[in-house]
Length: 168
Image (tube, rainbow, N blue to C red):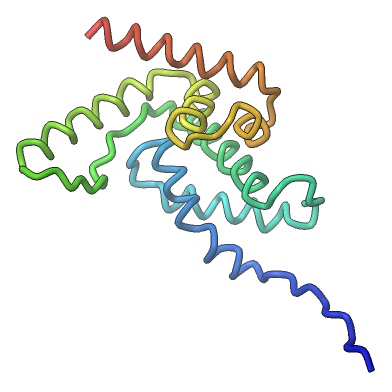
């Protein structure tokens, strides 16, 4: 006798939330900074995901689909608030001395402040490639753009950041 074929068990929304909530929060931190409404933004992301899941065709991974929602929520947030990037006070640094930790925190706050001056499309592309280490193709898939356009956004963001750093 042969065993009956196994049915693939679909994860529940709760499982999806548990698996991705931390990653979404980290992505939101990188994209909008340590603003107080990150929890609200995360809720918006998962609300949109819940509503969009019936339309998910599996042409990309769920993580890619979810990241596109994150980007959409972040862009909407920036349009609504016109808020600049907030410095991240929650980054844990294991530097050997308090002075080094303070200097690194200042550098990080400055980096977030400068990154906040870059347009959202360029900022998102830059964070995906330079911070998260994605290829241009993977980053393009996550933001719904073509790889050459994504590469141009990253290069433009790098130029803008270099100019801002040089200006002091």
